[in-house]
Image (cartoon, helix red, strand yellow):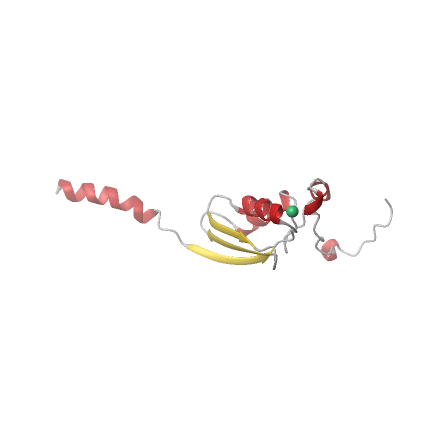
Length: 120
Ligand SMILES: [Cu+2]
């Protein structure tokens, strides 16, 4: 009896940790191998089990536990690191501070609502 209880105590946490992994793929703007590292590091939030960005296709493939992390948080984190995603645009300042080799062609500013900003 005592052994059974012990076995259950050891076993239950294992069950609770069973992960529910979701796969997702989205576009992240970047240029070189440094970008790849930066993007993948920024994407590696708690709950993300793997992040792989392709320099060729500019697609980020993500495996994550949707109970632990929201996809929007990953977009935000990548944008904070200086990279536009298909959903979130990075701050111009952060982008400007990237090394020269990392100055990728930016995402079109189509979602800025049509107001003309010609002055500088
Ligand atoms: Cu780069």
